Image (cartoon, rainbow, N blue to C red):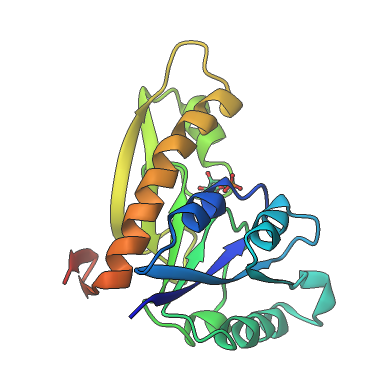
Amino acid sequence: MTARVVVLVSGTGTLLQALLDASDHDFDIVAVISDQPDALALERAQGAGVATAVLAPSSCASRDDWDLALADLVGAHNPDLIVCAGFMRVLGPGFLSEFPDRIINSHPALLPSFPGAHGVRDAIAYGVGVTGCTVHVVDGGVDTGPILAQRAVEVLQGDDESSLHERIKVEERLLLVDIVRRLSVGGIRITGRRVTFT
Ligand code: GAR
């Protein structure tokens, strides 16, 4: 059976594009939802004939209302898997409780180092020689959920945030497609923080 995948985005959407390009009999991107009305990722989805929706935080009376409205929007597509691909908002309990262990996120650093919105900038500022990307299960914290897979990327002399982020995203796209495919054809067991693919 083809897994139904909903992707949450906020920006450019190159990770989304990699997923759109890779979708096949294992998984199908059934909807793309953004918190930003002008996200380029929405155009990518529309170009691929995928349903889109926008849920701006300002359209809801409270943070909790936004979580519940997002859960409704996503749930309407009966997803097997929800992928945060460049989605820059923290999901609250009203959303997370609807889809336990079915939400994953891609982050541009080797967690638990450099969580948050500026993982690439923070890694450069710290002076690390190696950083990378992490795909993890989403829990109630900021980039704290159990790790599914990681890839390392060397920081080069003269790198700035943009050049390093572009090289990280090359690895990130490959990693995310691989993990979405693995979760589409199999499952996971989470024991403490450790994840086993089943
Ligand atoms: C990716 O590097 C993703 O890990 C990052 O935004 C980029 C999106 O790229 N997400 C975060 O930093 C979330 N904390 P894209 O818009 O080209 O897919």
